[in-house]
Image: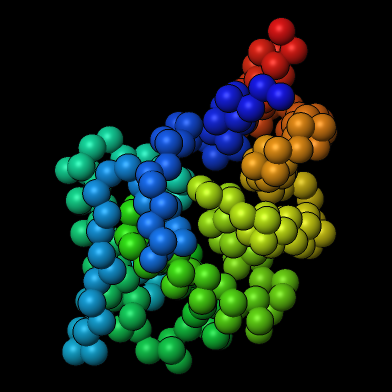
Length: 234
């Protein structure tokens, strides 16, 4: 099987550059680290007072998402990484300072923190992935159909160092998102391609690509998937 081309498929699914080779595993940390420097979680500070309300914090996270929503993140150099880390850290500190009663409900609370920590993981914040998992467990334990939490879990587990358990959970989340969406979702269908590729399921990967192209012939990843199929068939 021609799996050296796998990075091309994964890049198309994430609309991001192909992932860099993973660093050597750290036995004390089950999650991989980006090739650049690793940041630390900001310390807890009970005296910190948020300088913005929840909606302003969410707007700040949304502004960071185009750069940090992918692994590796869309960051040009260490200086940009440091700036993004500073912004993300301040947003997390403010988020922690927002009282629970200001969130719509506990599911939303955990969904927001799960996604915030996922962005931190992509940025290279050690320990952020485990905290994202903890919040996902609470969120999906309270609402097994939570759309944002299933999206966050799928995106988190379609990163590096896939395990059988993570792949199974990813498929469960994608199946839930597909079943509960009123119409086909382009990102969900692209994620199925990445899932099959990470599972080394060649027939399933091409079936997922064909299904994506049938639904989204002009989609964000359509041209890349077509080129990939043409290259594969040569």
